[in-house]
Length: 386
Image (tube, rainbow, N blue to C red; front, side, top):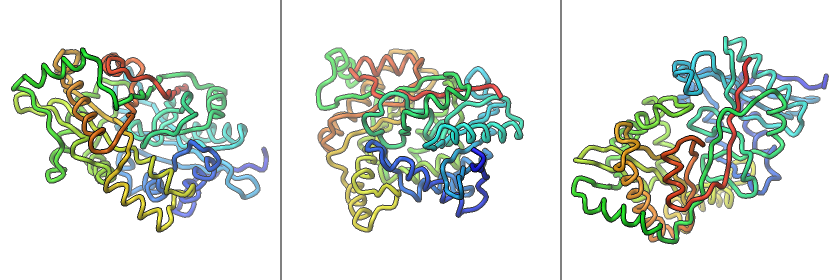
């Protein structure tokens, strides 16, 4: 162990090494879905990712005899520190994420170094892993390693669970994703609820508009920040993050797959669905995250008309004042059904993944159960007192 050194990343060259080790560490895993290298570098670069506007981040690399053998990030978010402690974050809560190592001893050294940095910043507890925020790739995959993740979800090897738990971390929260067959009708009860809503002149379910994209993004994020504000782990989206996320997701936006529900003309709910970009990335992207020229062309063609395409529902929400009401579930079922129809007819979709969903989010769990979806992945978020 004496020949292992942990060093802080302080320049672009080392930052690129940090990103590239993530690809190298997972290259042999057939279910690993590599993101684009440029996006991964942008995510951990100050000035590119607006997360850095309200967070402090330190990346670390582990080397053995000069060769990179591990990585981790340590960070804390000022917006998370300002949240109520009973919601998971709160004062003194830091995070780490992006852990990659083939060696349990190196992993232990990296976790210890991240904890040391967090203590030096005044943190007293850790919620991990987060890569980087709760909105990006939260949690450690502990069930569902036998199939690839959908876009914007993490995929970690099974070896990490005992390493993290062996470092003194205990379970804070479980996050689930749900698999849904969309090429069959929903149960009759759901169909009746949707039909009833269609007769209500006060309800309107509309597509997002690419012509008025910025307007609709603002509407969605307003609903999102309100709807999720009492959830465990919630940290509000900033204006900069809204613009950043909208720009990065715009190539995947299809108007008929993202719906806004209006009641008496007021936007009160939304559901965001995107084609599973990982399908294209795994097919045309090298394990280095750098597609060939032909790969880029094929990715561009896929983005233009993704077909056949499975679907992921990363976000949906209903204004807080309507939650736990019959109206909330009716709007949710209507949006899900309308998007299901489009996914089949326009994109030849056969399955969708909903999530992540907090284990104790009773409203969303009830909706997922009602439409016949089943848990297909579990991510653990851990905590530890420093």
